[in-house]
Image (cartoon, rainbow, N blue to C red; front, side, top):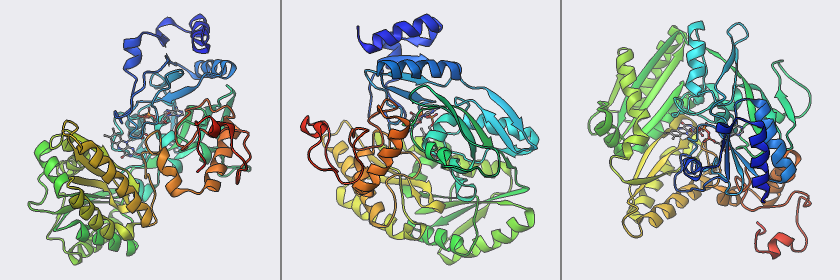
Length: 486
Ligand SMILES: Cc1cc2nc3c(=O)[nH]c(=O)nc-3n(C[C@H](O)[C@H](O)[C@H](O)COP(=O)(O)OP(=O)(O)OC[C@H]3O[C@@H](n4cnc5c(N)ncnc54)[C@H](O)[C@@H]3O)c2cc1C
């Protein structure tokens, strides 16, 4: 009997039968997240209903040496929730209770499977909302947001998930239950909450989160600006923020993305635009009005041929519909595409977009750009047809070159989608061996046996217990061909 069989037997004694899924066809439904290029059928799936059940699963995993992977809604785009074939997939989507909404304290306490937009729905009657707004907010979970440190259009002004999480309850890989962070203004000791946010499920399973609620703004104004090129739109973005204005959001779409969105949702963007910016300003009415005038001037100076202010909520919703539908809409113009996610300093936008266009032309591959321009978070969609020989490889190669371009300009290999399984190989391009060793030491403090989401984030299966810093001699894993020195 394998360790997994034994774990399954023990779980069946303790949990409802319907929570422990062994049937192959049902396990297969969890084989991938939003990045379907990677698929692994999990060894076992457990639908946990509360923190005690999560604790039970992780204790048994610890005792029997079985790896586990947490899964929220499975919308991740880096293969972070990719299951382990010999491990347990801990599915948290049934833990969907909003435990408390406290407008006076401006916070909410939620279970990890609660959907992002449901927090806002619960806070709205009190005049509040939950600010981090990934485009997937209707379907992604708070646990997944915490694990990925998710961003969104409005994170430019309000900050990423990490700025909105006050504390989490975490079941550590040995099954212990800890609370990290505090609702007090500050706390002594290490910032372990900050360590867990963005750790992509490698440090344990979040079973509860206390999040900040943000007061709904008095006024919101949305502008759609049409430009001839992404160079001009990039220049406008830099100059608006350089002038000290921090809009709630500045989103950019290029001609191909506009075309796809137009076909899909008829968003009525300026005809003939080579790029559009969706710029949203929010805050006190007088401040928004003053900023609006300035934004118009910056857009026009950068060459905008049309600056259109949404006249009412319907027009505003249509502008956003174009932007928010863009990922799906691109599926109408290409059978397959890679969603790349990289970051560059905002000031490099024009240069990087220009060079990306050249690289795409050289490779003969189409790229549609739709992204959070304000914080330099690019999402080039690299289009291909998997049925045509060589197209997938060409798209993959271009996608890698785009990441290298981001790094050349002082950026990062991921802005918000995380490293997961997909980008672990790129970590060595961004970090030194010493950087990665230090991260491994932190990981090992939580998870010395590498049971929590193994194989993700880090490029090689380095063992805990290794000395950090320069390594001397050959590690047994290297000798076995399982690890390499980076
Ligand atoms: C159309 C579309 C648009 C998107 N737009 C954005 C965007 O604008 N911004 C953005 O940041 N992302 C975006 N994403 C990516 C994705 O939605 C986010 O990464 C989201 O946070 C994932 O949440 P999830 O619940 O689906 O997590 P999953 O995909 O289930 O898991 C993601 C990672 O979190 C870990 N995890 C999940 N729950 C827990 C938990 N309770 N404890 C510990 N670890 C956990 C998993 O192990 C995995 O590593 C988009 C995805 C899609 C499909």
